[in-house]
Image 1: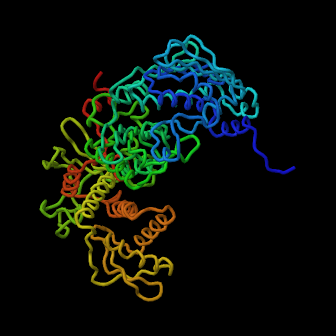
Image 2: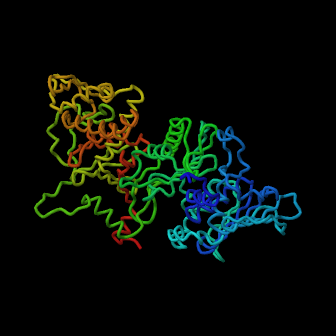
Image 3: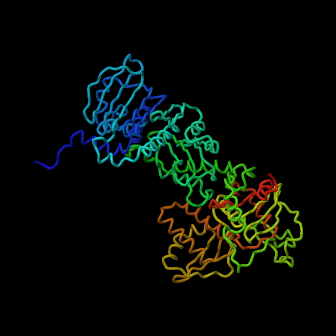
Amino acid sequence: MGRIHVLDPHVVNQIAAGEVVERPASVVKELVENALDADACRIEVDLRDGGRDLIEVRDDGYGIEPGDLERIFLPHATSKIGDVEDLRHIATLGFRGEALASIGSVARASIVSRTRDAEAGHRVENLEGHISAVVPCAASPGTVVRAEHLFARVPARRKFLRTATTELGHIKALLGRFALAYPHVAFRLQQGSQVLLDAPAETDRRARIAQVHGADLARELISTTSDDDPTLEAWIGPPSLTRADARLEQVFLNGRHIRDRTISHAVREAYRDLMPPGGRRPIAFLFLATDPEHVDVNVHPGKTEVRWKDTSSAHRVVRRTLRAALERAQPGVAVSLGGGEQHHEHAHNASSEAARRAAVEQAFLGGRGRSADSPARGFSFAPAAHPEAYAAGHDGAFVRESGPTDGDEGSLSGRTSTARTASGLRPIGQALGTYLLLEGDGELVLVDQHALHERVLFDRINERLREKGNLEVQRLLVPMVVHLDPADAARLFEERELLQTLGWIVEPFGGDAVAVNGVPAVLRRPDPEAALQELLELLERGRREGLDRTHLVSVAVDSLACRSAVMAGDILHEDEVLALLDQAEALNHSHSCPHGRPTRLTMTNAQLERWFHRSV
C-alpha cells in the first residue's frame, strides 16, 4: 500500500481550524465579518465562559437561502469569490470559505437564517463534522450562528485556552476594533447579564471612538484626512498622550483591521523627534481606503496582513499626513506643575503631590543630589557689554560676533533686566549652568538650554536641507588629518555624496588617513574624528536596518543638532538667551527637543502660591 493518501475531509477541516480558529475571539472575528459582508446594521454577540462554552452572533443582514444552507458548512464554500480573477479585487472581509467548516469541526455549530423577503427561517447544524438536514423554523430576518463547547473533543487544543477573563478581553478588544471601522453599524457584546460593549450606530467617528475608548481620550485626538491614494482618515494623539504598548495604534484598510510594518514605520516617522523618550508609543487610529486591486489581502490565514502594490506611496501618505497634522496642532510636551491652570493648551499637569516634588527636584537638581564636596553652580547670567554683539549664526546657531568684553565676567545679580523675548518673557538667570530661568506674565519658566537649542538647530538644519539640498560648509585653512580603520575610511569615501550633503569635505590622505577640508558650519566644537566616527556608526546601523537615504539623513541631522547645541554647563549671556528664545518662538515644536524630551517647565503664580501654602 502506498504511503501517500488523501486526508479525510474532517481532518482537513481540523487542520484549517488550526490556522483559522486559535481561540474564541477567532470564531467571533469570522462570524462578525460574515455579518458585515451581509450588510448587517446591527450585530449582537452573546458569550458564556469567555466564549469557551458558547458564542452566539446575531445580525440583521440579508440572510441565507435554504439551498445555500445545505452547503454552508462544506470546505471552501463561499459566495464571495467565483474564480481566480476575483482574488485580484477582494472587496469583502471574508472570502476563503474556511471559517464555518473549521468552526464546525471543533465545536457544536448551528445556523438559523431568514432572508428579508421570506416568511420563515431555516436551520442547519454541524455537530463536530456531522452536518444535519436543513429544516424550517421560526426566525427573525437575519442570521444567528451559535458555536458551543469550543475544542470540547480536542483537549490538546482546549488546554491552551486562557482563563475566561483573558479570552473575554480578546473578544472585547476585537469588537472594539470592528466598532471603530464600522461606525454606522450598532454593536453589542454581552456575557450573561453583563453588557461589555454597547455602541449604537454613529455617523461621527470621534463619537464612536468615545463609545469604545472613552470620551476623555476621544477629546484629545487630532483629526486629519488625505485624498491621495490610499485615502486616509486619521485620529491621532498629541505626543504628550502616549502608551507603553501599541494596542491603541490601530490601522484599518478598506474596513479590515491589519498589522502592517510599512504603516507602523510611517507612524513612527511622523512622530519622530516629538515623542518622549523611553520607547513610548503614540495613540493613532488610521482608516485607509484604496482600490482592492492595489492591495493583496490573501497573504495570511487570519487575513491580518496585506501586501501593497505600491508600498512607498502608502508610507508617504501616512507619514506626511500625520506629520502635517502634528505641525499644525503644535502639540508640545511641556510639563506644568500643580493641578490648576495650564500655561499651554496642550500641557499636561502632574497628577500628584509626589509628581510635583519630583518635577521640582528634576528641574533644580538635575534629578540627583549634590555631593558635599561638589561646588554649587552659580545662578546668574554673564552680561554682554554690547547687546548688538550677538546675532543668529549658521543654520540657526547663535554666536558672538565680537570678542569678549571687560563686562563678561559680571553677574546679572543686583541689576534689573528690561529685555524681553517676543513672547514677553524676561530673563532672570541661569541655574546650575543648565537651566534658564525666565519670568512672564504671572509665571516662571525653566528652560533646558541644551534641549531647546537642539530643537532650534534641528529645525533650521532641516529647513536648510529642504531649501538648498545641503548644509553650509566651514572651510578649514589647514586640513585636519584623521586616522580611521581602512574599512571605515573606504566606507566614508563610498558615502562622499552623503557627507557633502551634511557639510563635510573629506579627501584621501594616504593609507588609513583622511584629510578633513571642511566641516558643517553649524558645529560649535569641531572634533572631526569623534564626529566622523559617530557618522560611521550611523551608516553601519543604516546598512543593518536597511534605512533609505532620507531616513539616514534624518538620523544624521539628529546627531549633528545634538553635537552642535550648547551643553549643560555652558554659561550663556543674556543676549544669547534672548536670541535662542526668539528663534524658538518661530518653531512648531519648541516645547520638545528632537528626542521628545520637554524643553521647558512652567509654574504659574497661583501654583507657586499653593506650593508654598500662601493660598488656600
